[in-house]
Amino acid sequence: MIQVSYQGEPGAFSEEAATSFFGTRARLKPREQFKDVFSFATAGSGRLGIVPIENSVHGSVHEIYDLLMEHNLFITGEITLRIHHHLMTFPGAKLNDIRFVYSHPQALGQCAAFLRKFGKVKTVAYYDTAGAAKMIREERRKDAAAIASTQAARTYKLKVVRRNIETNHHNYTRFIALSRRSAPPLKVGKTSLVFAAQNIPGALFKALAVFALRDINLLKIESRPLLGKPWEYLFYLDISGSVREEKVRAALNHLGEVSTFLRVFGSYPTGTTIQG
Image (cartoon, rainbow, N blue to C red; front, side, top):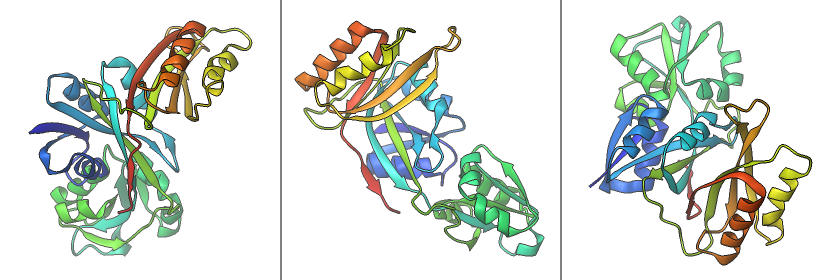
């Protein structure tokens, strides 16, 4: 049986992503921080990880890009979850008595419109949505509520008092699966990579042209600071295709010639979307 680590407590959205992607064959291992997931997946064979990399409302999870650079892991798959946020309380708590709302910072941001109308409450950032629910249960807080999933409410026996409180109901999070071994598909799919360009006029244009010349679709581009070189950047790309396709290999070889650094994180099948 494989072991899969995810960030958060049981009931977290990452646990749902892990279950949906790996199925019942996986033994799930919750970890408190993203770096712990990477360390777990790096530590030995049969160990995998799954982490969120972007949200359709709040954008990329930048810490994940930095951790990908720090660890020798491959992206082997992806899955997207429709995110529903719910407000939950300790059984018997009264809404008028709620003074604090706990959740992960991204969840609080995704529910900002509801929270503005909810009343005079203080929002408190917590390390995890399910962790916030767990704290409400363990401390029997009747002056506080958590924003989390229905699975978290069931896990910690909390009462859902308001459902679907996210501001944008087209709220999706994409998760990536991590492994020490690559598993590129024969064709189609996606390839994720990072490169650095020379700090000269036209360098980025020339780098991206290697894909345009071969009719390879650029799905996403993200820049992050290049450590040790102020005002220079790494560029993270998702492109259509697999490294097993000749045109993709040719484009990557060409990119290697015009860039100062190149690393391929992996090719993997295009993921499914779980509506929830």
